[in-house]
Amino acid sequence: MKRTIVFTIYLLAALSLAAQPKYVFYFIGDGMGDVHITAAEMYRAAIQGDTLGRVPTRMTQFPFSGQLTTHSASNAITDSPAAGTCLATGQKINNHAVGVTPKGDSIPTIAEILKNEGWGIGIMTTVAIDHATPASFFAHNANRSNYYPIGKQLCNSRFDFFGGAGFHHPEGKYDNQPVNLYRLAEKQGYTIAHGYQEALRAQQSAQKMILVQSTDDRGAKHGSCFNYVIDRGFDDLTLAQIVQVAIPFLQQRYDRFFMMVEGGMIDYACHEDDGRTAIDEVWDMDEALGYALDFYNEHPDETLIIVTADHETGGMALGNGDYTLHLDLLQHQKCSAWALSDMFNYLFRDNKKPSWQDVQNLWREQLGLWDSIPVTLQEEESLKALYKAVVSGKAKDIETLYQDLNVLADAGVQLLNKKAHLAWTTHNHTAHPVPVFTIGVGAERFSGWHDNTELIPILQSVLHP
Ligand SMILES: [Zn+2]
Image 1 (cartoon, protein in one colour):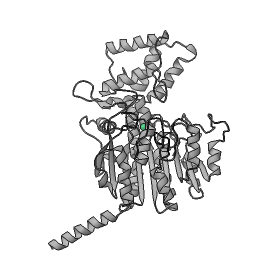
Image 2: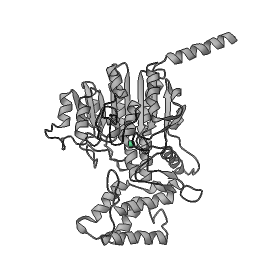
Image 3: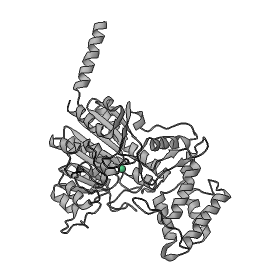
Image 4: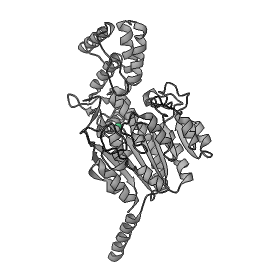
């Protein structure tokens, strides 16, 4: 009996050593630190009346987890393309570059290597398909902001599927002889699908696909990013829909596939220090992850899912005073700081000077201040002083990476964050380590504390034992 058990253990060990995944899902929450995930989980519990508990995300229920340190070759605090390149190649590069060494040499990415080995490749995001993280898997340029040449590299990548907001600069604004990138992509064999329904219709016939948001998506910043979940219209393209289209698209055409799925708007919300919006974006990526998990449950012996982040954004903290959290208050926020900023700018359009009541009403309606959340006399005086400064032209917008925020929108959202006891240290990235969660074939090898250079070698050792 004992010998049989020992033999069985050896056999299982040998099988697990020999097993190689045929399907790899690589989820990257841009800017997503441990705290963002904990905030998302505690918020869901708090709005159900449990101020101490968590509603677990799918990712934190994975059997294996670890941490990655994230500095770049040039900076203690990495930017997205340097971190993305490291997550795609295993090599550190300078901030601002994508896919090239500090000397300017191109570094092959895991997606390019697997494409050459005959794998199907899908790259998807909630921001532009040529933005830093997706670009890290197909582009090689000393400056991540060279969107047009990076978009050209996308068209020439031979990858099978792209999904996201579109090209950032499709007209080649910075190029002497521009060719529209959508036309170039079509020339290279891609079908451009606008929205979920069009993608479903083209799913069988398309050779390769670029799925972008429909021109009917209300309010979306076309080509640059999706609407935040909190501002989403009912027909907006979602990350979950993209994953739903991409899985059968790749599976029907290939024996093996690799998918990178980025929750890109998490980072946007954290650059704006917008707690509720960031929380919703974490849940949105987790929902997309649900479709990968369904696939894993159907193919558990052939699938590997990795969920990680490129860096932490905002220095988010839970706690800013006493030993309590009031995350449930964030449920009164009705729109993102970005959308609220647009509303305030509209109120002040053409040098209009709205009344204190008009301004107060906007905070009241969109953030629940005064009506659902008591505001102290001191806090009200401080908001009133800011209002007077704006009216007299003495207050400036808050500069963030993706959009300048109206100072009144920012002040309202920050007061709400403060009352929820959710705090921020910066509008930029931090050097905090980021989590890694894994499930499936070879998942155990990613456990523990690593530098971000080690993830790709571990993945390679799983794929090429
Ligand atoms: Zn990033």
